Image (cartoon, rainbow, N blue to C red):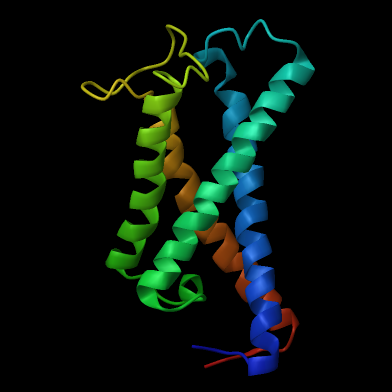
Length: 165
């Protein structure tokens, strides 16, 4: 169990928030860049156009990831749930938010929203028509995110002299 005094909870909460959003941004940015060939017109775009588009998408991804974490925290009533043994129900909430938002947004963006189109290289999920890579992103990245942030945050707590019981 993490013992954090009330005066340090605010700082610890802010640090955890920045870690979740920052690590998420970092991981999602590389995933977005790796997906470039799977979206129509992206391989022909200039380097800076690709960086701009991927950065904008990554900001959205980081916001979704943070929202998924926050909803799991509301569900468990514990902002620091990541530091404890993970419960299946918490993980299901965390993963479900990212997947559901992605399915809805990809459906809209490739349909009536006309934000982007998949290239012929993009594998698609039958019945949904959603790209398989954006869905895989919301399984693979969240797993890496919670492991990385747990490790970083617990290390930060130790460096600050916070006791573990």
